[in-house]
Length: 603
Figure 1 (tube, rainbow, N blue to C red):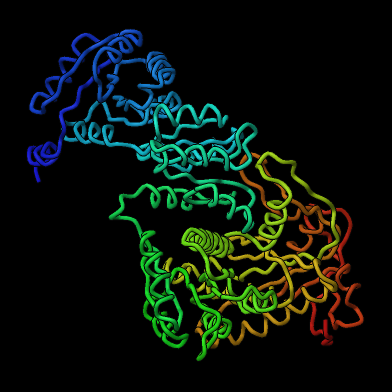
Figure 2: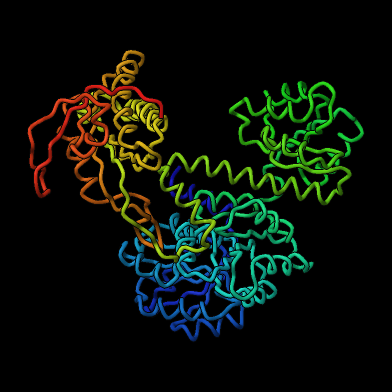
């Protein structure tokens, strides 16, 4: 396709904009008009921010263009002037720039769309179309500036127009004057909390259809239930990822025809009751399937896995509890929410169902509203569980453990970070000659090999009640000590891994060899890092450094332990004691031991 054909393609869907050109260069607007002469448009030219505001207030404007010779000081003045005018602060700005450095500085003022001063007509029209594309207005209400900064980094400026506000009362006025496309509000606001604000929004006919997301560090079932009772469309638990945030926004703001419809399986042998529940849920926009027996439901689930199951407890062939046990046997459905419905409110029966794996219990007869509220609550809770399960692939066990504790104790990123000294056993396991392996394999083959190897290592660490602290390339760092006999468990892991790695290599055809280093001692354990961005729950100190040095000195496929670790397990361990050595960066000498065997004990 040549340049003229490209221009034709672009202009076929081109809507003539009303352009306001801000320039201090004689002839710049004439040049711009010449380049756009084949495309319908109207253009007004001004020289200052004051003239710009006067023009906008007296006529419609679709787009502001800053020409390439507008200096950054003028660009800043223009953006600040727009920012102070609620009616026009959403106007798109397109700026001609000469360098990436200039773009970076202009971004700080609020310019979002750029085009090179040397661009051709095709690139210019494409930039104008991008600038005029409607951005989703996201009203974000949170009293913590650090959270606003994080969310701003997560959202693409070309897709979203983020409006941050720190006071609920001001946000409520903003919503009434200029309704956004979606509202994300922190639960624990100091003036009007998120629940009350949500109720106000949903009570107004003008704003009732705006998706409202409550966001909080509190993620218990009761907190989520309160949120949905207030009318929230979704509930997000902090901390969340950019992928998670973008997915929620796009789902809630998508046109109805593009929205994913949740699938609900209704299991009840009484046909009229089954049809009533299905009809109620379909009226709420859900997709439903029905099954008269537990076996029939299991067969349906094999081909059409549901997002949620509503199951009657009192069924003759397979009751609700037995059905739940069968569902939970399949790892594919381990996190699928199951709502048990029963005509009796028997505490022991409820407890048996929940123990079997049911998610919640509802007593018949129930209202349509109560059923829909329970379903919506469980769907969101199920999504949260899936997200937490996914996060476990990217966070250490220790980080997840402390994060969940802190969520229940405090809500907010700006809380004090905590650390203390703890006696623990630290272990490092590293692949020998990893660089050489990589040179003989493709990137995909290396990733496949490493992931298979890490699966083995992680499984063995957890078998010994260890905590995975971090992955460092092909090296794994683990902690032992949250239970008794941490030193013994670390040593047993090392010997077991070497045995199982031999079998692993035979089965896979790989030739992975390792070195393992173990040390016990006092280490600084805590959530270390920036309180405004990211914390890493980890350990630091000489005890960690010694374990890493011993791993580097260990013979291939061997476990080298420090003398401190040896003294803790000496009655159970057979070792080869090595000559005392001075480790780089350490004061004093260390006596290492190569671990040969352990007497088995039941822990």
